[in-house]
Length: 316
Ligand code: UDP
Ligand code: MG
Image (cartoon, rainbow, N blue to C red; front, side):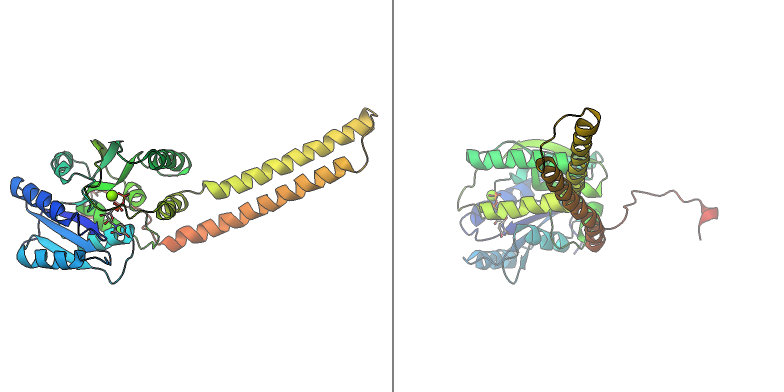
């Protein structure tokens, strides 16, 4: 059998309630579109009967490919497993399995893909979640964007259509703490966003607790920024400079202007700020070395070539 043009990758963790709806929506989408599409479903170690439902579906419908993970690995790793399995030759659409991301957006995504975009990501115009979660998401993306060294688009999650060549690069990135939306941005090529309204879950509950969201946010910040470490060096440097100025100010006050300077206090304050600053500065310097080890250990490709023009006479 030939490989399909498009793969739709959806991770599922205890989604037996939403499962029939998901299949229905995906089926009608596949029936309607003049594209060859496979669906890759990943069971992320579900404890309900999601896996049984998946099994029955894959046995009766050849468009579905099912992958069962040995235990719960979390959303990002489940998606990574699916992206590894996907065989779509043109592009792969990553989608939540709870229908919060409308699969029908594939049509708009695909149009843009055909216009030459390698990544078409969905941007959430409105969220139908509680205000605390909305506020948390809203501020997180803005903080991340301001401290990150890549231009992570605001309010976009993993929901996206990604070209085969970008998926290949992402699959070849061996970093184990995965923040896929950051990795996707990091790869480059032409990327664009499509606005959509994120639906509510039709059934079941969010599997992302606040603790898990924080973990994801941490991965986003620490995998794609150097700023926290630079901040240490800068704060330390500022404190040292400040303590020196304070020292000189007191010297001038006493010896040039002949004014009274209280005994002990200025010296103590100077020592506290100076040595505190020195500590921070030193930590920042160690941090710079750790950062280099950290980035080296990620084993990311050094560069990604878009295309080449090689003239015959130069070929080896
Ligand atoms: N999910 C998963 N493994 C997990 C947690 C979630 O595969 O450990 C799946 C889940 O079944 C859903 C998608 O990832 O299809 C998004 O999760 P969820 O809806 O809980 O997150 P939210 O939409 O609330 O951010
Ligand atoms: Mg959800």
